[in-house]
Structure formats: structure tokens, C-alpha cells
Image (cartoon, rainbow, N blue to C red; front, side, top):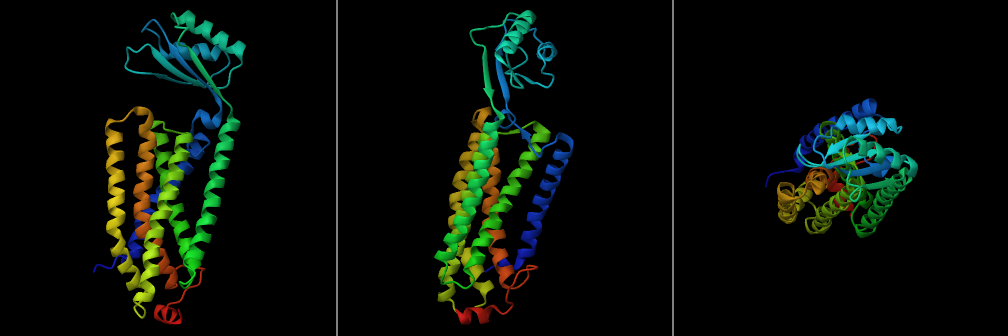
Length: 318
């Protein structure tokens, strides 16, 4: 039986190869743009205008000039469709009602504007702040509950607290991977963080912890059955006994997400891609981060935390 746990330093190195560049990308984005991610209107606040003209000759510069005259010099303009499309989307800062009317008149002077289909949606930045706080609180409370649950459920296993901590560290591993990818895609493709991104992150958190607990539970079952064997051997056996279940579940989800990425609408592809990356990272971290961390802790290989090098002695005491 191939010893997966024995290669733990390799798995840690692979994780570092993904996480460290992601952190550097977020730092670069913060230095150059003021934030680690491009933030959508959900977090910055402002207005989104859905415009339809009756003339294909409208240019982005002409639209930008109208908004600049109204006092908004930093707008994001996108033509919806091909180069002959009549529809445009403009995102700008929050506008009062009288200013919106001024914008409509300015746009109508460029080319006839279809006022029946004109739409303007305003979002307050406080909504994004509340959503962010709620998401962070959900992750923090979830981490505490998960740790407490594992400690109680694994109370008959020596050092049950370590299982909870390793599951949370694997969860943080996946969050950092997702954040790094989102920051990179924001720089390359202009992807923005919105409410769907937070939904994807929370989904990844739940998936990551659940997958780690499955492996940990098999370790808990195998410890009394194989009493006297080295802890590393018991852990490696537990991984091989659960890996087929994990892969079967994950592959089904991956195939569905790949199909959506290939054939789904553009509005959902960013969400599915981030979710795909997160679940892929979760599949990796549950087997190659959480469990190896547990063994490294047991063998005293993690700096600044206690651990016993004699695993057989600890099993005998159990």
C-alpha cells in the first residue's frame, strides 16, 4: 500500500506553490488598485444603467463623456453583445434623481435612447459591508462549531482537539486558494467580487470540512481496531479506505460544473469556475493537507506546538 502520508512534505510544498503566489497577487492588486480584488457594485455602491439605443454608431467615448459631464469620471462601460449590439451596460457612482435625468438627456443627444427599456439600479455600499460582515461571522462561528463538534465526537481519541484544528486549517487553505484565483482573474479578466463569490466561498467551506471529517472518522474507527500499529500506518490505511468514496462524490460534481462552464450562460460561469476551483482544492486539502498535518503534529514536526514522537506510546495509553 503506497504511503501517502509519508509524502506529506511534498503535499505541503504543492500547497505552498499555489497559496504563496496567490498571496503575492493579492498584495500586488492591493498596491496597484487599492484592494486585493475588484469589487462589484454590491460592495462599492453605485448605479448600474442598462441602455438601449436606436443607433449602432454609439461609441464608448461618447457615453463616457456624458457621464463625465454629470460628475462621474470613473465609469465602467460594456457593450452587451457583438459590435453591432444596441445595448450597453454602464456602472457608475450613485446618482441622485435629477442627475439621472441629466444623464438620460445627454445620452439621448448622442443617439435616440429607448426610454421604455432604460433601467437604473442603485445599490448602497452599506449593503455590501453588511453582507461581508455576515459572511465573515458565518465562517468564524462555523469554525468554532466544527471544532467543538469534532472534539465532542472524537472525545475517545487521544488529542481530539487536533482533529478540529487540522480541519479548520484545511478549510483556510481552500479559502486562500479561492481568494488567490479570484484576485488573479480580477487582474486578467476584470472579474469582480460579488454576492455570488461569497456564496461560492461558503459552499467550499462546508464541502472542505465535511470531506475532512469523513477521513478523520475512519481514523477514529481504525485506532482501536489496529491498536499497537504506528499512528502513521493507521492514518494511511484510513485514507485508502475512504478515498474511493471521496473521489466518486467529487467527480460527479466536477462533471456537472464542467458542463455548465462549457454550455452555461455567461452570468453564472464566474460563480461556477470559482466553485470548481474551491471544490478541487477541498478535495486535495482533505486528503493531502488536513490528514498530513495531523500526522506531522503527532510526530512533533510542527514548530511551536507540542507533539509526541513516540506514537506507539500514545496509542498504548489510549
